[in-house]
Image (tube, rainbow, N blue to C red; front, side, top):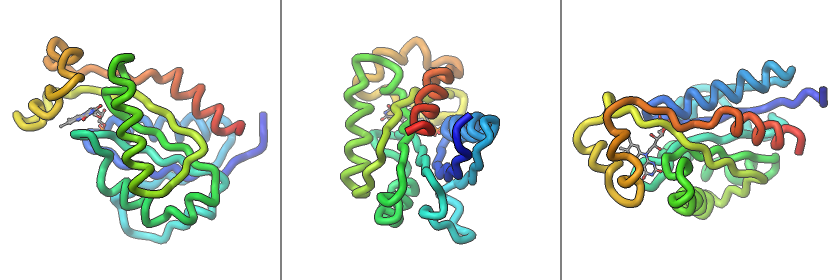
Length: 178
Ligand SMILES: Cc1cc2nc3c(=O)[nH]c(=O)nc-3n(C[C@H](O)[C@H](O)[C@H](O)COP(=O)(O)O)c2cc1C
């Protein structure tokens, strides 16, 4: 096993899938003997200094083309310190699930990084989930707009998870080794 790494995982979630993804990463890293501080960026209590960690993972999900405003604010407010430590951005979206919408998933990341001036050393585009039981009419309409609609018509009945857990684990391991 390699050296013990002190990680910060800072995340935002709207329907819970990024929370699940962040917890999975934390569990995997802890199992491997690393140290993890787990932080929801919407929780403003308590001091947090990103340079206190060896590596930082920032995770958030996309709704109507944008990551959570709280995530954007966190990355922007901490941009100088974030740029001093190796960073990994984990961007959760449905566009990441399909080859013909991957470019959209990349576009969401470009928008976030341009707005925040944060330069992570690695980016993971990871597919999230659809949970139609939790959505109101407006949320369903938002999801069915654009290129994703073709993939979702039949899936907007039941909860469906698109997240590829093994691929996530491999890419996080790459970041740990880098
Ligand atoms: C109202 C709504 C809008 C969404 N808009 C997009 C979108 O523009 N592009 C995309 O790729 N995924 C979109 N998604 C899919 C989410 O990124 C996906 O459900 C993800 O798992 C949500 O993560 P969370 O549970 O951590 O909030 C949308 C989901 C909802 C509910």
